[in-house]
Amino acid sequence: MNTTVPAIGYWDHYTTLAATTTLTRLECLWQAWYQWWHHDVVATGLLFFLVHELMYFGRCIPWYIIDRVPYFRRYKIQPDKLPSDAEQWECLKSVLKSHFVVEALPIWLFHPVCRQLKIAVSVPFPAATTVAWQVALFFVLEDMWHYWAHRLFHVGWFYKHIHKQHHRYAAPFGLAAEYAHPVEVMSLGFGTVGFPVIYAALAARYPHWQWPDLHLFTIAVWISLRLWQAVDAHSGYEFPWSLHHFVPFWAGADHHDDHHHYFIGNYASSFRWFDYMLDTESTGASRARRAHRSRTRAEAAVKAKVA
Image (tube, rainbow, N blue to C red; front, top):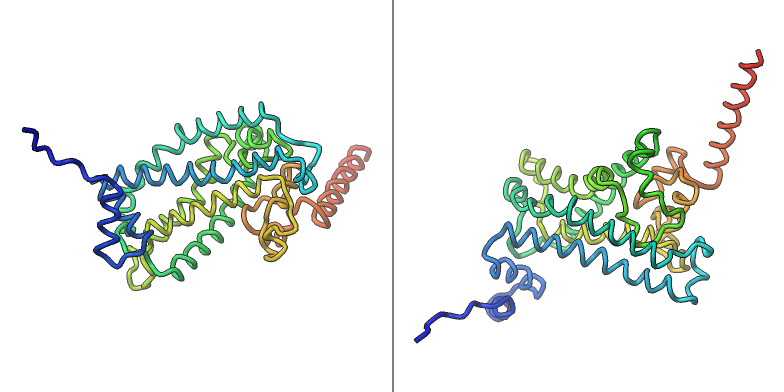
């Protein structure tokens, strides 16, 4: 007689935790995932790969649908430039290739990093206030990194051989957020993943600073929000309810669409302050000043040759 005990399914783990603990439903779902896999490296790798794919493409699909609905054309920043299905398909193939070839391995190797840096994986999750200020910190640090790295990619050789791929579409669309050269994907991706790692490393190295521990759940929240921000910034749509109307320093789609339209300026990812303070805005007074400086230099060069 067969006496094999049937494997316990994921949902069985969840219902047991929900019935026998005081954990929240989300914490039960998280813990059941790790119990079900019995292998933390696999559990973390697959979890973060799925989070990345679901958050990215889940945010891209609504924008693809909006592109196909004439009603929303009134909100299109560049209404005469709608991406064709062929362009969307070519972009999708390139992005999927990047996800599986460039990004998959670092994602799957992330759990050993967590273990080394004592990034928490077990439940319960940290307080919502802790998650909120850590995510806010990562947004600010990533924006700083993105500004300077992105600005570098617009310099000569870097633009020609690396960043030019991302500027294939002068009118961006959601799916194009991660359409980029592998070098750009990894370097700009450092701003998303690198700062949580640095935070955890410093917290472990200097315990007397008493920084709250970083939890893997917080990183998952941060990556999800960063992906949504990146896709929305490339959406090509400006609505009356867009976030920057209520949070003036938020960048938004209008900010990044101008970057693709003019191929210069507006280098930051999430906020407007770096471009404002460093006089690199794509439009308005900043653009006029850059044009004036260029004319002045050109006139001076002509006068020098005549002399």
